[in-house]
Image (cartoon, rainbow, N blue to C red):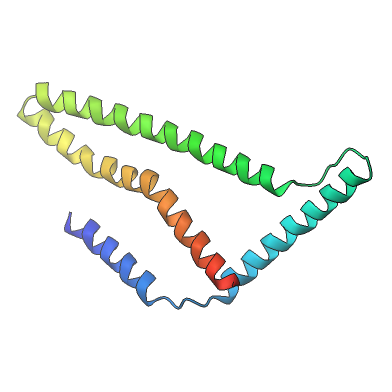
Length: 135
């Protein structure tokens, strides 16, 4: 358990010390925005010309990614609740040896929950940092 807290503390310190200005991240964000803006412009031009647009509509792309995130997050949530329920029931009705095995399996479960539930927060941090670098 000390190792997990140590790793989390080191990660937080690296994020705090890491320079806010990153050329690579800025470059990636600029290229992504340029791509989406070009695609949006093409989409609007084709639509205005009465053609069937094949470009990327930016709002539609945002909506799809948010929908996918919500679906995967919900699946992860139900899996975590199911595993926690099974482990809890096994812990309550298990013998001393089984309880020890269940306690050993709790570490990967907790790490998995941190990854699943923390992934959105980590993703939002990167997006917010990228957006602040662009301004």
